[in-house]
Length: 473
Image (cartoon, rainbow, N blue to C red; front, side):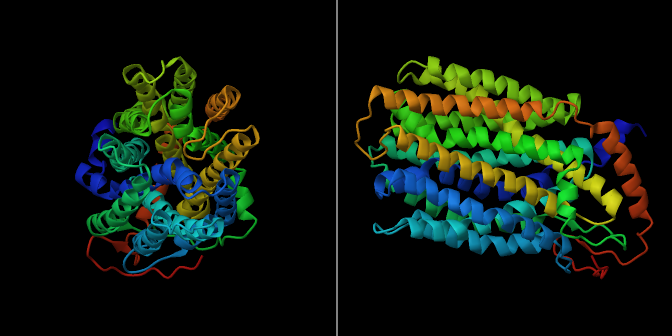
Protein backbone atom coordinates (compact mmCIF):
# COMPACT_ATOMS: atom_id res chain seq x y z
CA UNK A 1 0.00 0.00 0.00
CA UNK A 2 1.37 3.45 -0.97
CA UNK A 3 2.02 6.22 1.57
CA UNK A 4 -0.89 8.25 0.18
CA UNK A 5 -3.27 5.28 0.54
CA UNK A 6 -2.08 4.73 4.12
CA UNK A 7 -2.62 8.41 4.92
CA UNK A 8 -6.18 8.30 3.55
CA UNK A 9 -6.92 5.14 5.52
CA UNK A 10 -5.78 6.84 8.72
CA UNK A 11 -7.90 9.94 8.13
CA UNK A 12 -10.45 10.88 10.72
CA UNK A 13 -13.95 10.46 9.21
CA UNK A 14 -15.40 13.77 8.11
CA UNK A 15 -18.60 13.26 10.14
CA UNK A 16 -16.53 12.71 13.30
CA UNK A 17 -14.37 15.74 12.57
CA UNK A 18 -17.43 17.97 12.10
CA UNK A 19 -19.10 16.70 15.29
CA UNK A 20 -15.89 17.29 17.24
CA UNK A 21 -15.53 20.79 15.80
CA UNK A 22 -18.87 21.83 17.37
CA UNK A 23 -17.09 23.29 20.42
CA UNK A 24 -15.59 25.92 18.13
CA UNK A 25 -19.06 27.39 17.53
CA UNK A 26 -19.54 28.97 21.01
CA UNK A 27 -15.81 29.61 21.45
CA UNK A 28 -15.64 31.64 18.24
CA UNK A 29 -18.87 33.43 19.09
CA UNK A 30 -17.46 34.40 22.49
CA UNK A 31 -14.19 35.58 20.95
CA UNK A 32 -15.93 38.01 18.59
CA UNK A 33 -18.45 39.27 21.12
CA UNK A 34 -15.86 39.81 23.85
CA UNK A 35 -13.21 41.48 21.69
CA UNK A 36 -15.39 43.63 19.43
CA UNK A 37 -18.73 44.39 21.09
CA UNK A 38 -18.49 43.97 24.86
CA UNK A 39 -15.75 46.58 25.63
CA UNK A 40 -17.57 49.19 23.56
CA UNK A 41 -20.88 48.34 25.28
CA UNK A 42 -19.46 48.92 28.76
CA UNK A 43 -17.69 52.12 27.68
CA UNK A 44 -20.46 53.62 25.54
CA UNK A 45 -23.79 52.31 26.83
CA UNK A 46 -22.97 51.82 30.53
CA UNK A 47 -20.73 54.90 30.63
CA UNK A 48 -17.66 53.36 32.30
CA UNK A 49 -14.55 55.38 31.49
CA UNK A 50 -12.69 54.10 28.39
CA UNK A 51 -9.38 53.72 30.24
CA UNK A 52 -11.11 51.85 33.09
CA UNK A 53 -12.66 49.36 30.67
CA UNK A 54 -9.26 48.76 29.09
CA UNK A 55 -7.71 48.37 32.54
CA UNK A 56 -10.38 45.82 33.54
CA UNK A 57 -9.60 43.61 30.56
CA UNK A 58 -5.86 43.94 31.19
CA UNK A 59 -6.17 43.04 34.89
CA UNK A 60 -8.30 39.97 34.16
CA UNK A 61 -5.95 38.72 31.47
CA UNK A 62 -2.96 39.06 33.77
CA UNK A 63 -4.74 37.15 36.54
CA UNK A 64 -5.98 34.52 34.11
CA UNK A 65 -2.67 33.77 32.38
CA UNK A 66 -1.04 31.52 35.05
CA UNK A 67 -4.31 29.60 35.44
CA UNK A 68 -3.87 28.13 31.96
CA UNK A 69 -0.63 26.43 32.90
CA UNK A 70 -2.27 24.79 35.91
CA UNK A 71 -5.24 23.71 33.83
CA UNK A 72 -3.02 22.18 31.14
CA UNK A 73 -0.97 20.31 33.73
CA UNK A 74 -4.14 19.01 35.44
CA UNK A 75 -5.66 17.89 32.14
CA UNK A 76 -2.56 15.90 31.19
CA UNK A 77 -2.69 14.06 34.54
CA UNK A 78 -6.41 13.27 34.32
CA UNK A 79 -7.26 9.63 33.59
CA UNK A 80 -10.85 8.52 34.12
CA UNK A 81 -13.12 5.83 32.72
CA UNK A 82 -14.86 8.55 30.68
CA UNK A 83 -11.63 9.86 29.17
CA UNK A 84 -9.27 12.73 29.84
CA UNK A 85 -10.46 15.78 27.90
CA UNK A 86 -14.13 14.74 27.81
CA UNK A 87 -14.42 15.31 31.56
CA UNK A 88 -12.89 18.78 31.35
CA UNK A 89 -15.19 19.71 28.48
CA UNK A 90 -18.19 18.89 30.65
CA UNK A 91 -16.73 20.92 33.52
CA UNK A 92 -16.01 24.03 31.48
CA UNK A 93 -19.47 24.42 29.92
CA UNK A 94 -21.50 25.55 33.01
CA UNK A 95 -18.72 27.88 34.18
CA UNK A 96 -18.64 29.61 30.81
CA UNK A 97 -22.44 29.84 30.74
CA UNK A 98 -22.48 31.62 34.11
CA UNK A 99 -19.87 34.15 32.99
CA UNK A 100 -21.72 34.84 29.73
CA UNK A 101 -25.04 35.42 31.48
CA UNK A 102 -23.77 38.03 33.92
CA UNK A 103 -21.39 39.76 31.50
CA UNK A 104 -23.87 40.18 28.66
CA UNK A 105 -26.88 41.02 30.80
CA UNK A 106 -25.36 43.48 33.30
CA UNK A 107 -27.36 45.85 35.47
CA UNK A 108 -27.29 49.53 34.53
CA UNK A 109 -25.29 50.16 37.72
CA UNK A 110 -22.46 47.79 36.67
CA UNK A 111 -19.00 49.01 37.67
CA UNK A 112 -15.45 48.14 36.72
CA UNK A 113 -15.30 45.65 39.60
CA UNK A 114 -18.45 43.92 38.33
CA UNK A 115 -16.83 43.66 34.90
CA UNK A 116 -13.59 42.24 36.35
CA UNK A 117 -15.37 39.63 38.51
CA UNK A 118 -17.47 38.16 35.72
CA UNK A 119 -14.68 38.38 33.15
CA UNK A 120 -12.65 36.13 35.46
CA UNK A 121 -15.46 33.55 35.60
CA UNK A 122 -16.06 33.73 31.86
CA UNK A 123 -12.39 33.35 30.97
CA UNK A 124 -12.00 30.38 33.33
CA UNK A 125 -14.79 28.49 31.59
CA UNK A 126 -13.54 29.58 28.18
CA UNK A 127 -10.01 28.38 28.98
CA UNK A 128 -11.19 24.97 30.14
CA UNK A 129 -13.24 24.43 26.98
CA UNK A 130 -10.60 25.78 24.60
CA UNK A 131 -7.69 23.87 26.16
CA UNK A 132 -9.50 20.54 26.39
CA UNK A 133 -10.72 20.91 22.81
CA UNK A 134 -7.29 21.70 21.34
CA UNK A 135 -5.51 18.97 23.30
CA UNK A 136 -8.21 16.43 22.43
CA UNK A 137 -7.79 17.35 18.75
CA UNK A 138 -4.07 16.55 18.84
CA UNK A 139 -4.83 12.98 19.99
CA UNK A 140 -7.82 12.59 17.68
CA UNK A 141 -5.77 13.29 14.53
CA UNK A 142 -2.19 12.16 15.23
CA UNK A 143 -0.73 12.43 11.73
CA UNK A 144 0.83 15.54 10.14
CA UNK A 145 -1.52 16.24 7.22
CA UNK A 146 -4.70 14.94 8.89
CA UNK A 147 -3.95 17.23 11.82
CA UNK A 148 -3.86 20.25 9.51
CA UNK A 149 -7.15 19.06 8.01
CA UNK A 150 -8.85 18.70 11.42
CA UNK A 151 -7.72 22.10 12.70
CA UNK A 152 -8.88 23.60 9.41
CA UNK A 153 -12.35 22.08 9.90
CA UNK A 154 -12.45 23.31 13.50
CA UNK A 155 -11.61 26.86 12.48
CA UNK A 156 -13.91 26.74 9.46
CA UNK A 157 -16.90 25.62 11.54
CA UNK A 158 -16.06 28.23 14.16
CA UNK A 159 -16.66 30.84 11.49
CA UNK A 160 -20.38 29.99 11.64
CA UNK A 161 -20.49 30.81 15.36
CA UNK A 162 -18.75 34.11 14.77
CA UNK A 163 -21.00 34.88 11.80
CA UNK A 164 -24.11 34.31 13.91
CA UNK A 165 -22.86 36.91 16.40
CA UNK A 166 -22.18 39.37 13.60
CA UNK A 167 -25.68 38.85 12.20
CA UNK A 168 -27.25 40.24 15.37
CA UNK A 169 -26.20 43.91 14.97
CA UNK A 170 -26.78 43.67 11.22
CA UNK A 171 -30.40 42.60 11.75
CA UNK A 172 -30.93 45.18 14.50
CA UNK A 173 -29.50 47.91 12.28
CA UNK A 174 -31.89 46.94 9.47
CA UNK A 175 -34.76 47.11 12.00
CA UNK A 176 -33.43 50.50 13.15
CA UNK A 177 -33.16 49.14 16.67
CA UNK A 178 -30.67 50.62 19.14
CA UNK A 179 -27.15 49.24 19.54
CA UNK A 180 -27.75 48.67 23.25
CA UNK A 181 -29.79 45.51 22.66
CA UNK A 182 -27.09 43.81 20.57
CA UNK A 183 -25.00 42.60 23.50
CA UNK A 184 -27.97 41.16 25.41
CA UNK A 185 -29.08 39.17 22.34
CA UNK A 186 -25.54 37.91 21.83
CA UNK A 187 -25.43 36.74 25.42
CA UNK A 188 -28.63 34.71 25.14
CA UNK A 189 -27.48 33.17 21.87
CA UNK A 190 -24.12 32.03 23.26
CA UNK A 191 -25.73 30.83 26.49
CA UNK A 192 -28.05 28.51 24.52
CA UNK A 193 -25.35 27.37 22.07
CA UNK A 194 -22.83 26.13 24.66
CA UNK A 195 -24.74 23.04 25.96
CA UNK A 196 -25.81 22.02 22.45
CA UNK A 197 -22.27 22.14 21.09
CA UNK A 198 -20.74 20.38 24.08
CA UNK A 199 -23.33 17.60 23.90
CA UNK A 200 -22.43 16.95 20.25
CA UNK A 201 -18.73 16.67 21.10
CA UNK A 202 -19.05 14.58 24.24
CA UNK A 203 -21.43 11.99 22.85
CA UNK A 204 -20.17 11.76 19.26
CA UNK A 205 -16.38 11.86 19.54
CA UNK A 206 -14.08 8.97 20.52
CA UNK A 207 -11.21 9.58 22.91
CA UNK A 208 -8.07 7.52 23.41
CA UNK A 209 -5.50 8.01 26.13
CA UNK A 210 -2.07 6.94 24.92
CA UNK A 211 0.10 4.71 27.13
CA UNK A 212 2.68 6.45 29.31
CA UNK A 213 6.23 5.45 30.12
CA UNK A 214 7.32 5.35 33.75
CA UNK A 215 10.24 7.42 34.92
CA UNK A 216 9.71 11.07 33.99
CA UNK A 217 7.79 13.27 36.41
CA UNK A 218 7.00 16.87 35.60
CA UNK A 219 8.85 19.50 37.61
CA UNK A 220 8.42 23.24 37.75
CA UNK A 221 11.65 23.86 35.86
CA UNK A 222 10.30 21.74 33.00
CA UNK A 223 8.13 24.72 32.04
CA UNK A 224 11.31 26.52 31.05
CA UNK A 225 12.59 23.47 29.17
CA UNK A 226 9.40 23.31 27.12
CA UNK A 227 9.35 27.03 26.37
CA UNK A 228 12.97 27.06 25.23
CA UNK A 229 12.63 24.13 22.83
CA UNK A 230 13.63 25.70 19.50
CA UNK A 231 10.49 24.66 17.61
CA UNK A 232 8.09 25.55 20.41
CA UNK A 233 9.79 28.86 21.20
CA UNK A 234 9.22 29.94 17.60
CA UNK A 235 5.57 28.86 17.79
CA UNK A 236 5.00 30.77 21.03
CA UNK A 237 6.51 33.99 19.73
CA UNK A 238 4.69 33.68 16.42
CA UNK A 239 1.41 32.93 18.19
CA UNK A 240 1.85 35.97 20.43
CA UNK A 241 2.42 38.25 17.45
CA UNK A 242 -0.37 36.69 15.37
CA UNK A 243 -2.81 37.14 18.25
CA UNK A 244 -1.65 40.65 19.10
CA UNK A 245 -2.06 42.01 15.56
CA UNK A 246 -5.70 40.99 14.95
CA UNK A 247 -6.53 41.50 18.65
CA UNK A 248 -5.29 45.08 18.40
CA UNK A 249 -7.52 45.57 15.37
CA UNK A 250 -10.55 43.99 17.06
CA UNK A 251 -10.39 46.40 19.98
CA UNK A 252 -10.52 49.38 17.64
CA UNK A 253 -12.56 47.90 14.80
CA UNK A 254 -15.91 49.62 15.38
CA UNK A 255 -14.28 52.94 16.24
CA UNK A 256 -12.18 52.84 13.03
CA UNK A 257 -14.93 51.82 10.62
CA UNK A 258 -17.54 54.18 12.03
CA UNK A 259 -15.48 57.30 12.79
CA UNK A 260 -12.75 56.97 10.13
CA UNK A 261 -14.41 55.14 7.23
CA UNK A 262 -17.93 56.50 7.73
CA UNK A 263 -19.91 53.28 8.16
CA UNK A 264 -22.78 52.67 10.55
CA UNK A 265 -22.42 50.00 13.24
CA UNK A 266 -24.57 47.65 11.16
CA UNK A 267 -22.52 48.25 8.01
CA UNK A 268 -19.28 47.77 9.92
CA UNK A 269 -20.68 44.50 11.25
CA UNK A 270 -21.47 43.38 7.69
CA UNK A 271 -17.85 44.03 6.69
CA UNK A 272 -16.66 42.19 9.77
CA UNK A 273 -18.96 39.33 8.75
CA UNK A 274 -17.26 39.28 5.36
CA UNK A 275 -13.89 39.09 7.15
CA UNK A 276 -15.06 36.26 9.40
CA UNK A 277 -16.94 34.30 6.73
CA UNK A 278 -13.86 34.39 4.51
CA UNK A 279 -12.36 32.08 7.11
CA UNK A 280 -14.90 29.40 6.18
CA UNK A 281 -12.96 28.99 2.95
CA UNK A 282 -9.63 30.27 4.22
CA UNK A 283 -9.17 27.90 7.17
CA UNK A 284 -9.44 24.58 5.30
CA UNK A 285 -7.62 25.91 2.24
CA UNK A 286 -4.73 27.24 4.34
CA UNK A 287 -4.66 23.83 6.01
CA UNK A 288 -4.51 22.26 2.56
CA UNK A 289 -1.72 24.64 1.55
CA UNK A 290 0.20 23.45 4.61
CA UNK A 291 0.07 19.87 3.29
CA UNK A 292 1.72 21.10 0.09
CA UNK A 293 4.41 23.48 1.32
CA UNK A 294 4.51 22.65 5.09
CA UNK A 295 2.84 24.50 7.95
CA UNK A 296 5.57 27.01 8.74
CA UNK A 297 5.86 28.15 5.11
CA UNK A 298 2.08 28.51 4.93
CA UNK A 299 2.28 30.82 7.97
CA UNK A 300 4.78 33.03 6.16
CA UNK A 301 2.53 33.23 3.08
CA UNK A 302 -0.53 34.11 5.18
CA UNK A 303 1.17 36.83 7.21
CA UNK A 304 2.75 38.54 4.20
CA UNK A 305 -0.46 38.73 2.17
CA UNK A 306 -2.49 39.75 5.25
CA UNK A 307 -0.20 42.69 6.01
CA UNK A 308 -0.24 43.96 2.43
CA UNK A 309 -4.03 43.82 2.34
CA UNK A 310 -4.32 45.58 5.69
CA UNK A 311 -2.42 48.60 4.42
CA UNK A 312 -5.02 49.02 1.69
CA UNK A 313 -7.87 49.63 4.16
CA UNK A 314 -7.16 53.37 4.24
CA UNK A 315 -8.02 53.48 0.52
CA UNK A 316 -11.64 52.42 1.18
CA UNK A 317 -13.91 55.33 0.16
CA UNK A 318 -16.16 56.69 2.88
CA UNK A 319 -19.10 54.34 3.42
CA UNK A 320 -18.45 52.27 0.27
CA UNK A 321 -19.54 48.74 1.17
CA UNK A 322 -18.68 47.12 -2.18
CA UNK A 323 -15.07 48.24 -2.23
CA UNK A 324 -14.66 47.73 1.52
CA UNK A 325 -15.72 44.09 1.25
CA UNK A 326 -12.82 43.17 -1.08
CA UNK A 327 -9.85 43.77 1.27
CA UNK A 328 -11.88 42.54 4.25
CA UNK A 329 -12.48 39.19 2.52
CA UNK A 330 -8.83 38.84 1.55
CA UNK A 331 -7.62 39.72 5.07
CA UNK A 332 -10.09 37.32 6.69
CA UNK A 333 -9.08 34.52 4.32
CA UNK A 334 -5.44 34.82 5.36
CA UNK A 335 -6.09 35.44 9.07
CA UNK A 336 -8.06 32.19 9.27
CA UNK A 337 -4.82 30.32 8.74
CA UNK A 338 -3.01 31.80 11.74
CA UNK A 339 -4.55 29.65 14.49
CA UNK A 340 -5.07 26.64 12.22
CA UNK A 341 -1.38 26.39 11.50
CA UNK A 342 0.15 27.31 14.86
CA UNK A 343 -2.21 24.98 16.76
CA UNK A 344 -1.44 22.11 14.40
CA UNK A 345 2.28 22.82 14.84
CA UNK A 346 1.84 22.77 18.63
CA UNK A 347 0.33 19.30 18.34
CA UNK A 348 3.41 18.20 16.36
CA UNK A 349 5.64 19.44 19.18
CA UNK A 350 3.47 17.51 21.67
CA UNK A 351 4.28 14.32 19.77
CA UNK A 352 7.98 15.13 19.90
CA UNK A 353 7.80 15.73 23.65
CA UNK A 354 5.84 12.53 24.28
CA UNK A 355 8.43 10.54 22.33
CA UNK A 356 11.22 11.97 24.49
CA UNK A 357 9.50 11.93 27.88
CA UNK A 358 6.93 9.14 27.54
CA UNK A 359 4.22 11.41 28.97
CA UNK A 360 1.32 13.34 27.44
CA UNK A 361 2.00 17.09 27.52
CA UNK A 362 -0.56 18.29 24.97
CA UNK A 363 -2.68 20.11 27.54
CA UNK A 364 0.32 21.92 28.97
CA UNK A 365 1.69 22.90 25.56
CA UNK A 366 -1.66 24.20 24.36
CA UNK A 367 -2.05 26.05 27.66
CA UNK A 368 1.15 27.92 26.89
CA UNK A 369 -0.08 28.91 23.43
CA UNK A 370 -3.37 30.08 24.94
CA UNK A 371 -1.35 32.16 27.42
CA UNK A 372 0.22 34.04 24.52
CA UNK A 373 -3.23 34.81 23.12
CA UNK A 374 -4.34 36.13 26.50
CA UNK A 375 -1.26 38.29 26.86
CA UNK A 376 -2.01 39.68 23.41
CA UNK A 377 -5.63 40.28 24.36
CA UNK A 378 -4.64 42.11 27.52
CA UNK A 379 -2.12 44.30 25.74
CA UNK A 380 -4.32 45.00 22.72
CA UNK A 381 -7.39 46.21 24.63
CA UNK A 382 -5.58 47.76 27.57
CA UNK A 383 -2.93 49.61 25.58
CA UNK A 384 -5.03 50.77 22.65
CA UNK A 385 -7.85 52.07 24.85
CA UNK A 386 -5.31 53.83 27.05
CA UNK A 387 -3.61 55.44 24.05
CA UNK A 388 -6.86 56.61 22.49
CA UNK A 389 -7.95 58.09 25.80
CA UNK A 390 -4.67 60.00 26.13
CA UNK A 391 -4.73 61.44 22.60
CA UNK A 392 -8.21 62.84 23.12
CA UNK A 393 -10.38 60.27 21.35
CA UNK A 394 -13.90 60.22 22.82
CA UNK A 395 -15.72 56.86 22.88
CA UNK A 396 -19.00 57.90 24.52
CA UNK A 397 -22.12 57.68 22.33
CA UNK A 398 -22.75 60.92 20.42
CA UNK A 399 -19.29 62.39 21.12
CA UNK A 400 -17.63 64.51 18.40
CA UNK A 401 -13.93 63.79 17.77
CA UNK A 402 -11.40 66.17 16.25
CA UNK A 403 -9.63 65.32 12.95
CA UNK A 404 -6.42 64.89 14.94
CA UNK A 405 -8.06 62.32 17.24
CA UNK A 406 -9.40 60.42 14.18
CA UNK A 407 -5.92 60.42 12.65
CA UNK A 408 -4.45 58.93 15.81
CA UNK A 409 -7.19 56.28 15.72
CA UNK A 410 -6.20 55.38 12.15
CA UNK A 411 -2.51 55.14 12.99
CA UNK A 412 -3.21 52.93 16.00
CA UNK A 413 -5.47 50.69 13.93
CA UNK A 414 -2.94 50.00 11.16
CA UNK A 415 0.65 50.35 12.34
CA UNK A 416 0.52 47.98 15.30
CA UNK A 417 -1.20 45.05 13.54
CA UNK A 418 1.03 45.17 10.43
CA UNK A 419 4.17 45.22 12.56
CA UNK A 420 3.17 42.32 14.78
CA UNK A 421 1.78 40.10 12.02
CA UNK A 422 4.96 40.44 9.98
CA UNK A 423 7.03 39.60 13.06
CA UNK A 424 4.88 36.50 13.50
CA UNK A 425 5.69 35.34 10.00
CA UNK A 426 9.40 36.06 10.49
CA UNK A 427 9.44 33.66 13.46
CA UNK A 428 8.95 30.76 11.06
CA UNK A 429 12.21 31.38 9.22
CA UNK A 430 14.46 28.40 9.97
CA UNK A 431 11.71 26.24 11.57
CA UNK A 432 12.84 22.57 11.64
CA UNK A 433 9.89 20.37 12.69
CA UNK A 434 8.44 19.77 9.23
CA UNK A 435 6.59 16.86 7.65
CA UNK A 436 9.59 14.55 7.28
CA UNK A 437 10.78 14.96 10.88
CA UNK A 438 7.24 14.54 12.21
CA UNK A 439 6.78 11.35 10.17
CA UNK A 440 9.86 9.89 11.89
CA UNK A 441 8.45 10.86 15.30
CA UNK A 442 5.08 9.24 14.56
CA UNK A 443 6.71 6.03 13.36
CA UNK A 444 8.66 5.77 16.61
CA UNK A 445 5.60 6.62 18.71
CA UNK A 446 3.36 4.14 16.91
CA UNK A 447 5.96 1.40 17.30
CA UNK A 448 6.36 2.07 21.01
CA UNK A 449 2.62 2.35 21.61
CA UNK A 450 2.11 -0.99 19.87
CA UNK A 451 4.22 -2.67 22.57
CA UNK A 452 1.58 -1.65 25.13
CA UNK A 453 -1.39 -3.05 23.23
CA UNK A 454 -1.55 -6.04 25.53
CA UNK A 455 -1.44 -3.84 28.67
CA UNK A 456 -4.57 -2.31 30.26
CA UNK A 457 -4.72 0.99 28.39
CA UNK A 458 -7.64 3.33 28.92
CA UNK A 459 -9.53 3.85 25.69
CA UNK A 460 -12.92 5.52 25.87
CA UNK A 461 -15.11 5.36 22.77
CA UNK A 462 -18.48 7.07 22.63
CA UNK A 463 -20.66 5.70 25.39
CA UNK A 464 -18.26 2.86 26.34
CA UNK A 465 -16.38 2.31 29.60
CA UNK A 466 -12.80 1.04 29.62
CA UNK A 467 -10.02 0.04 31.97
CA UNK A 468 -8.03 2.68 33.81
CA UNK A 469 -4.25 2.90 33.62
CA UNK A 470 -2.82 3.82 37.00
CA UNK A 471 0.69 4.87 35.92
CA UNK A 472 1.91 7.80 37.97
CA UNK A 473 3.20 11.07 36.54
